[in-house]
Image (cartoon, rainbow, N blue to C red):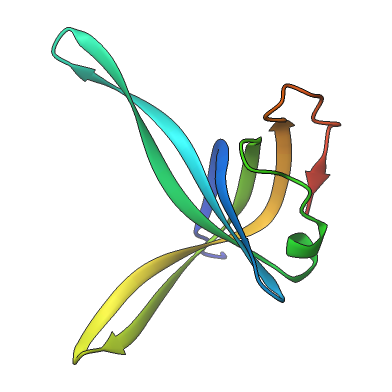
Length: 111
């Protein structure tokens, strides 16, 4: 049996950083929570990494609502005599659900 670590995010793109072979997306997802008698909405920002073909074919823009699926990868590095740990979200597929300007998403799926 294969062990897997996957993620699924539905949210709006806040920032797109394009490098030579990789693209980094900052994606906000909203979560509701009860605060006394009121409901509050909190935005949680996630950093997602797109490699190679998926990064090159990305047509989403800042503000677009997207559905991203992929795998979770743990990383660690040494700095200042300490070990630092982190988690990378590596996209395997992305679909544009709605454009920021309200235009059609063109049923666009990239994977």
